[in-house]
Amino acid sequence: MAPATEPEERGGFFSRLRAGLSRSTARLTEGLTGLFTRRKLDEAALEELEEALITADLGVAASQRIVQQFRRSRFGKEVTGEEVREALAGEIAAILEPVARPLVIDEARRPHVVLVVGVNGTGKTTTIAKLGQQFREQGKKVAFVAGDTFRAAAVEQLQIWGDRTGCHVHTPVKPGADAAGLAYDALKSAQADGTEILLVDTAGRLHNKAALMEELRKVVRVLQRIDESAPHSVLLVLDATTGQNATQQCKVFAEMVQVSGLVVTKLDGSAKGGIVVALAQEFGLPVHAVGVGEKAADLRPFEARDFARSLLGL
Image (cartoon, rainbow, N blue to C red; front, side, top):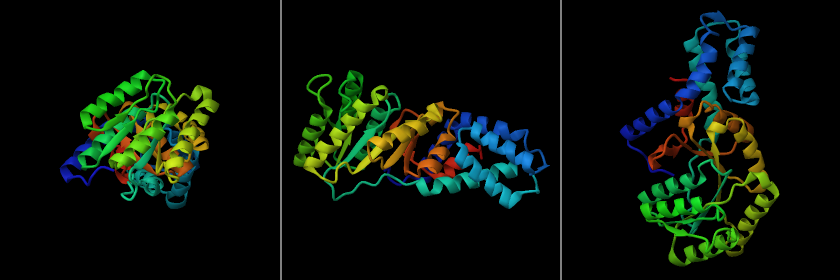
């Protein structure tokens, strides 16, 4: 995904991540502060801990797993709030480590096709633009497909980003044109002109699930007529501010297409950053990147330990 970063730049993003997660941190640590002022970790304390974690959007399964670990390692011992936060960060990092995997572009594919899916409003189009800019900075030839053909604003937004980043944008002839046909033509054209990465935007109108499912499957089918291994990556973009709704969206999109990885956006606008832990525990899908702001540099590869410590305000 993003190139290896200099320590100073990485430090800058870590600070932004911590600042971005501050609302989530406040929500989580508020529940813990009164709970552990030098008290024994008994059943009542563990129950309260589990409740605090569930309230902070970590989900039931992850919260139970963490509490079980506490029961095994610290039961009956006196603990301080600081010790609990440190231990929690370690347990959360352990859940996140297996899913913290960058998006890898297969150089052998020309182009590597990335299908980007998700509900309208999660930041799909902006994510495509940011990824495009990052790949361009690595010297790659990138093109966008404005496949959310019914939303003129989405098409326009990609065109603006295309101009800014020097990425060619494949646009529909008219609003509401067939997205699959557009994707087919775009892939043909990308193969002919040596495009290395083709980022395909899609519709996300969940109120009509059957129609959306059919549209996405049709896009996949027509891409496979040209390259049977396409799309090579299917990114699901989720908005952290929706909390547990993101879990539901993940279920729904996994039924429609073979989601290969997640991007979680808008962590800076949310008190529900714990949702990333719930997603990791429930689905085990790679979390390729998280977003904490508007700039391309604010979308970065997901680091489990950094995220866990930031979430606990450490």
